[in-house]
Image (cartoon, rainbow, N blue to C red; front, side):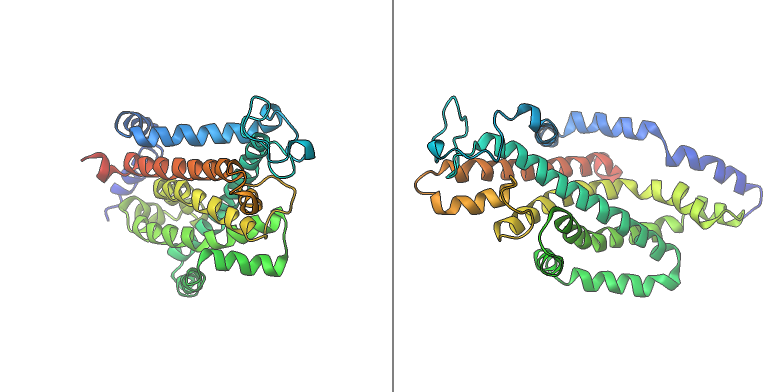
Length: 299
């Protein structure tokens, strides 16, 4: 590579890496071409706001027991009815959004930080690649729910343990994607130019490699969060994870099994909330993928 070309290549890197116009174009494309994805984003936003504002919006204390209102049908006083302990279902569904989204987003974020770091290092340092990626393959050989059950069985129930159990399984999924993307970006001309002028590895990875692999990682995140929500609900349904009487959709569904025939509303509303938020994240993730992937935008 000619010496004179190195500054020219490096000079073009910030424009290619940051390029705010790329994100503006992606947002406009998303709004214009992906109606279903926009609907999914609106559903996700609705549940996020509901969870954040649950203490303000909820009409009752979600754990307040009222035997007189046990299995109360939907009414003006209780729009979603009440469960077998007389607890207001609307309030519990709202607080359930708070708990489910807190667990899933925290777990995915924790798994993303660890997985992306491992993937970057394995892709950049070949001596770390073999052992790191084989370990990720071993972790991925176990089904996610089995992996989470094993960790919960070792650590016990509790909010932090559930987050950790779900986060650990997210690590190899991020690591594999970050590793493959790093290998691709590593061969780019501008990265080779930066290496040739003696830039430190940490600066190269943080400033030039990571920003160029963010798009697929963001898409991965939007698709892993609903999986984490389902895992959270599954653990609670099995009696693990968040401890009662904390309002959580999976535990609400498990509690409703004995009363589903007598009062089907105790199962319908938490199940509907779970279905809607998973649907919202999935279609939002699909639309986001189409908007951020340049090959799909060109179609």
